Length: 115
Image (tube, rainbow, N blue to C red):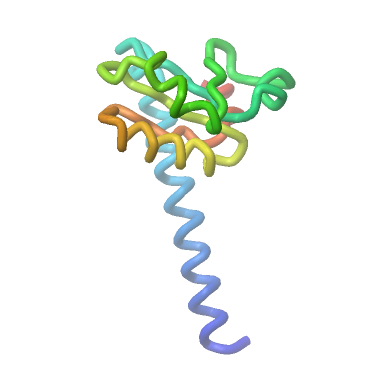
């Protein structure tokens, strides 16, 4: 294995560890965010959401989030989830660009079911 491949593998491991750590931090905050009036927004498609979801979560698919942004209160916490954490990451950027400050990417909806 050449030296460049080792650097790539190390960088990938660091990236994965960072994502897991940040998801862990958000998941610990979820109960207090919900007590503050926060909402869990699942940005998966309606079909994905219909198959399974976290009880109490609201389905706003990523592709319609911009149109439905007025349904959300930018003064309350918003907890985002999806299947892998990627779409919820994009949703977080979209909300923050639209004056939402208390936005959290919880990663996968399955992780939220353990809370």
